[in-house]
Length: 192
Length: 227
Image 1 (cartoon, rainbow over the protein chains, first blue to last red):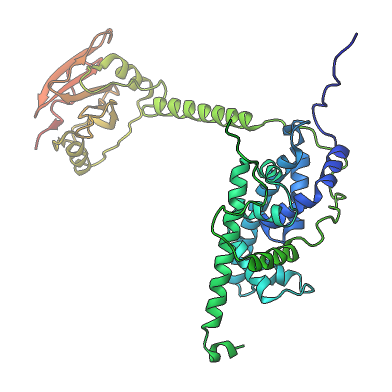
Image 2 (tube, rainbow over the protein chains, first blue to last red; image 1 turned 135 degrees about the vertical axis):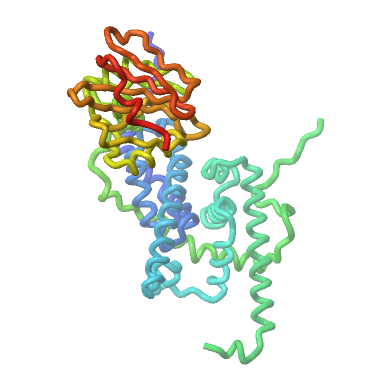
């Protein structure tokens, strides 16, 4: 009798890779938005996929592909942000500020965001990378803390703590923003 | 048995209390900003048709290449430093405190007989000897002896930066080649192995001069003096 289980392939092929990317697209896109901002998320994912395909020999089939890909996306996002900063500095030096590098809001002019949304976005930008990822995975995808922990690669209790502290920080910052706007003089508020 | 109740996911009580209305407003805003269009397929058309093979690890090869080049360069520099000076055959090297091997320098000098320093006037001669020995020597350029020039005898004293050891190449009126070793009196000039040659030794200042040639008498003793 042959009880041997079918062995895992040593390395994913391109089609298996594409299928896994398709399966986890919402989480991967959200992590990219958390890491690089909505404006650069798709570029980051594209670059991360190319990078990951070249590094498939480092991925062990049967382990958590989503967590592995999240790490690749994070690293790609860091490189993208560094490149954007260098490019912005160059553009500023020649007096040609590139509007695309500023924010997602400017990169997507068709989206109608309120001042409150913009304040929320700024407050989220001020969070650390891990709290930001945990918060977005919880609020947008409604993942359980166990799932968030698996994706982000941290203990479940830490994921829970990150979400609650991030929410508290956002609330505090937005309340302060609101208070600051209320104390602004009428002349200042009237400025363009 | 003490059983802990299972914590629900949306556990309030961690961190400060948040106004529920504000919390809901923040969550709505986050979903609008970050949650749109999450399911849109990722375009994988730009990916290579096949997963590329695992890359070979080239770093060690590069390191080995650089190491080999460095080793070759180091060896070349060592050979260059060891062979420069009196030319071919390589000049023997000595360290401070060790005797001057007269036979080896004599052989090298007689083979090559090319000086490193040429002093063609009494002034240059005095300046050079002053620098080399801290003793300005006078040379009689009209005595019929050709003063070819000086060669180094290697080894510099680290403290003074000088070895105070030099060899003077000269040629007699009859064309006989001569070398005279100038060194402080406490430095031994070892004459072993010189073979069938004549040596003549005298002092000048605190230096000992050892002239080696086939001539029966020294030719430099009356030519090189202290002023």
